[in-house]
Length: 294
Figure 1 (cartoon, rainbow, N blue to C red):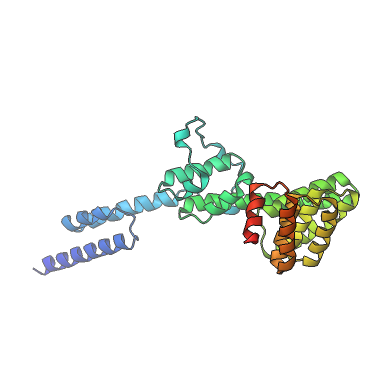
Figure 2 (spheres, rainbow, N blue to C red; figure 1 turned 135 degrees about the horizontal axis):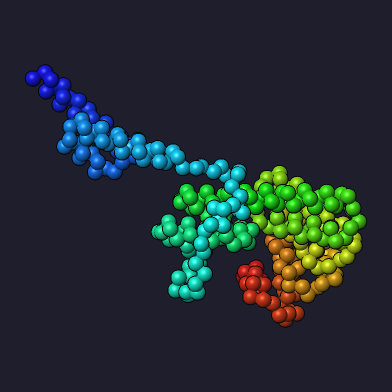
């Protein structure tokens, strides 16, 4: 009788351990395996433990690749087959694909991006980095880390070339363009971003001494707006306005500048002048003008 009581107590303990292990996810088994423990005393618990350790050891044997060491050019990405069939019914916008309830489609999409040119999909990768799917987040963050590392390498290269030959206009142009593109990706944060924006200011100011063009003025104005160098923005807008008075981009920058610093009277005069000139504007410009007119 004592042995039977001990056996029943052991069986109950095994059932409780199995049940707790399943609900706490300590045991890597399906919840229905509890009935094996329940209806097959002691030996059922042994079977549950064997299955748990089989699953655990299989997971443990998987190769975990650290984010820092994953390369976009790795065989992992190259080995993914991309469906190139033209099927309009299967086309899903990138943003929508991230929120659909299909892990397979989300992961296929992120791999398609990585197989293409990830640097062209920075905004998408940033959104993917906030996804609930941990695998999608992993690949997105990995891609952005690699893009940042490649950007840093190229920026150091351009910095060395520029220091070695400061009067080389071709190098200066390439350096300005690349640094501007890097900043537009919004991968830089904090003091790193401020430092690089100040560097871009210096390079563009130097470039304008070689050749004055509206693209450089616009880039320099936008960069100074980001840095809140409003005095310099005002000077640049005045100079640029005297050269390209009818430029839509400059007019939009003026609107942004006046609204940012709270110069409402000048903003109103600018809107009135635009309406009096009857100048043709794009839909974007018309929308901005209409907003501030009301």
